[in-house]
Image (tube, rainbow, N blue to C red):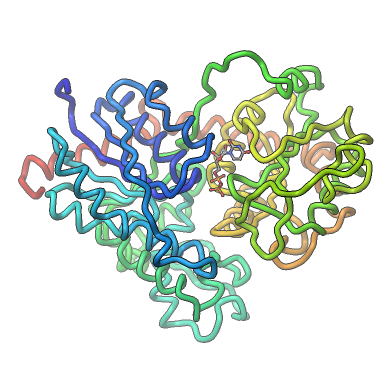
Length: 479
Ligand code: UDP
């Protein structure tokens, strides 16, 4: 290895939502800040999209990708164990493999960065005398809630969702009870205790990096950095380093979908997708299909077969009706909409779609990567939160940033009816509010996000500060 400033190891928890931003942070540190970077990937299985993402031939110089052996969790996990608990268990089980990989490295990393569930490996950083940092692949608001939750646990009685008043979060916008993150929905569930522990341990590192930027979340960032009450739980420096999103890479031959998009008028197509794992019920899928058809707007819909009760499930198992329309879509839907819309099964090239000039709106589950990808392309949204911290994201996008509309009922509580979907699609794609105000706001954020990460921008400087701080610790033998 040629000598570089620092060697950083970044540990990714399983899932595309973690892997995508971790890789981007790694690329950014290696390409723009002169670091040697090794990404350690904890995986349970590998999808084609994940394998493509981890292809070492596409990694830039000075970025190394190491897949740890898949963790066998069959003996500790059953289908009733919720996602947060599963992730925490997987990360605990991965510790021997992480130790073994670090021991075998010729140049030991001085900096160890983990993402949302990697706090399980903080002890390993101490064993190997590395500075340890947390990389939050979500918002500053979510970070504040997670760190402050163990205080709320003492202050609030009963279930948070039944609370009459918004939950007070020092220095930040309060959190509406119905917007709390999934693990806070049931205080008797194991994943709530895992979440409390995660939040408590977040402050046991040397600094917290967040995939956000100053102009986007001024209030929450300021609170995390300076509010006295919040600082009493945060304790460590906080660095906004975003928006780190996948850049559009040079593609091979054009797909049929992109050729179709090329033929559509500018900003006339709404893109519909629920992230890497989001699914809807059969009834909701039918209503969404009707809503899109009634809106008479052009669309691209990444479609998964419905799943009842599991908004974060994803399998393509259903059959097709006589005209090729899958059973869970209204009769004849594909035939009637074939000129106006494209249905893509399971997985779509999201970045190519969002960055295409004919796309003018995104109906999204508000996963943080999808949100950043939408904003980085100046595309306004219909916020349709399903799980994790997505209700918080949706509220921020619609009520604070003015770049999204959301339904009157929460999609996780009730079925959103076709009339309301039609109206939301028309608002984003046709109304003055959508076509002018929301689009202009999204484009302003696109610009400010780009500036934040450019040389001299606020996030660029934050990254320089973390590196400097780590180097100082290294020199003063604190690590
Ligand atoms: N993604 C994609 N095609 C799809 C669905 C998702 O490329 O059909 C990518 C998307 O661009 C994003 C990531 O998968 O980078 C999903 O991350 P996000 O945080 O939005 O949601 P999650 O999947 O974690 O819920």
